Image (cartoon, rainbow, N blue to C red):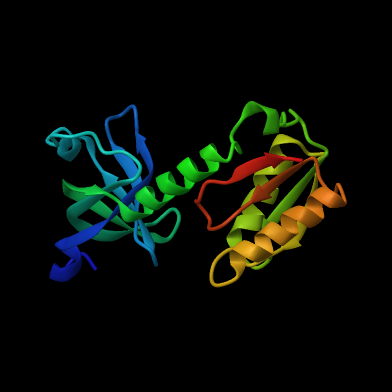
Length: 196
């Protein structure tokens, strides 16, 4: 792989998510489009040459090298250069939806419920075959050995997934099957906890 001229000189266009500016000066983020994503790293020496601060939702073009991060066994891009390409389409869609829901009053404090500090039962809505459920079980039981994990398998991507997730949430709420819910997709995608 190290001798492959194509993988050593790639240009990739996408939208930044999960951006982290590490205290060491290195930048860690995911680059994605509508169909795929790849992890990226930009070391401090290259990051210091940038003329803007990257952030989630920003559309960029990066130049770098594709390699394997051995610890996780995943491909990622080691970025040497990054240029702005405007706000990403996915971010604009997200903002549009957020504004719509804000106008409907769905983010008002009256609708928010406090998440218990040490939930007894965690409901998990995700695929029962993916790595995410193992990650959730490992982290949750390590932090609280007495916690009970209740899995309700649902598809978390593809056509009809949104409706099936919404139905699963209703079932969990109506039957009071958990203290909190985790909806998980992908090994490193952030998960949102929802109080019941």
